[in-house]
Image (tube, rainbow, N blue to C red; front, side):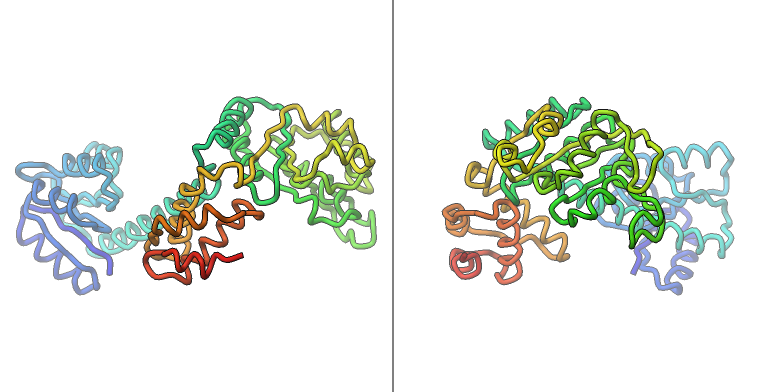
Amino acid sequence: MPKILIIDDEKAIRQTLKEILGYEKYAVEEAKDGEEGLNLLLKNEYDVVLCDIKMPKLDGIEVLERAKNEGVAAQFIMISAHGTIDTAVEATKKGAYDFIQKPPDLNRLLLTIKNAIENKSLANETKVLKQKFGRAFEIIGESEAICHVKEMIARVAPTDAKVLITGPNGSGKELVARQLHRYSRRSSQSFIEVNCAAIPSELIESELFGHEKGSFTSAIKNRTGKFEQADGGTLFLDEIGDMSLSAQAKVLRALQERKITKVGGEKEIEVDVRVIAATNKNLQKEIETGNFREDLYHRLAVVIIQVPSLGERTDDLNLLIQKFLGDIAIEYGSRPKLIDNEAVAYLKSQKWTGNIRELRNVIERLHIMSLQTITLDDAEKYAAK
């Protein structure tokens, strides 16, 4: 049930509004002046505040300003019999949702309250999504190895240099790529990811460069490739060591000339793309065996960032566990679970061949199977290899 606070020095106004809003199934509280209203706002959570402007002790504008400075999320609807356009503008600038003159039109007031509640709900959802996004792509750790990675990102991200990210599966290569994009001048543009290992070799060129209708059997319409989609932004070629040699040749040309040609097409398309590549393979050995082009390697490896395995950064394990416990609690809509020191020590003693990805999966399993505190017994039972 949405909660509404009425702040008004006129008792008759408060009672009338409280009766009307109570009938509309709102939970209503009231304050007789600005000071009392501000105290209630700092102690309790409300969805909407109906606030008079002319009041003793603190006027409505002061209440609004101080509440917003304290981070109060409630939507303010200012009400006054002495309002002017200038007053309404001032209230809006200070964060009010709307301004209504006394005596308020009942239909307009109820509609404004309904819209204000929806606006607050949308703002909360946006805030949660931003938190989830920020947490999801945050690089956690204070070990020497991971600090070196962060330092490399800070230096390279603002440039347009091509980066080759190396490291074992599950170590966080995608996070590094996303951080490079996030702190680049291209951050407002697209970040396009291509998993080269997941696309059949006969389709990878169409995926990267697009195709013209009728260029092959299943090409029933024109397709825009990933290079074109990433124009102005960043193209992340994950697992590039699995790319076919013919596709490698076309990627090399695109990097050299900043132009692509669709499969089955003749027209050259100019693209402005920063390419970041990642692999879990030793590309030097792949070059020796003829599976990877040496000229493409040198194009991609302007800067090489080596992401350490979890075994090389065990000092970060506790921080990672706490992050995952928080993330998973948000996803499940529950309270974050605690984990005792013995359970943490047990997890540290394990060999994490799947690296960060494996650890995250284990923590999710422990969250599901354990009570409020994850114990050594839980870890031994549910984190066993």
